[in-house]
Image (cartoon, rainbow, N blue to C red; front, side, top):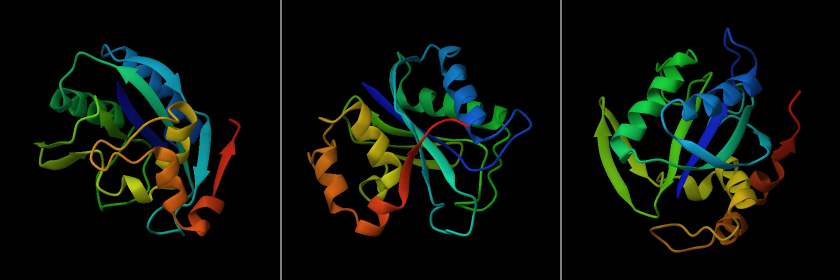
Length: 170
């Protein structure tokens, strides 16, 4: 099972934040990535700069024959096709796709000068990943710590629990 986190906090020439995420999900199919489940949309404050536009995030459960490095290549290609610019770390962006879990393995690799750690080192602090992840896979366990996603949610600060909203597409 592959879990991907998708987010957007900027419109693109294709449309708003929701449209960017929907287009990214559709693009996955073109690369042989089968999406089996998709969470609701969640809106959260931008991290770490809460002054930046709010993010819309989802998590999808998928299957693919692609090894992690090739999957990363596809995800970067999709991000760039949706006008993602890589300037400063944590800048607002039209599309961001992260590998949350790859067959319950802990993986580290480099691709195009980018460091990939699966699962993401800060996953346990990220409400915008944990809430949609819990929705589609409530029994998911962190590959390294073996903690259930519900336990990870309990451990995040109350402020983070209260600052995320499940929302309908506008």
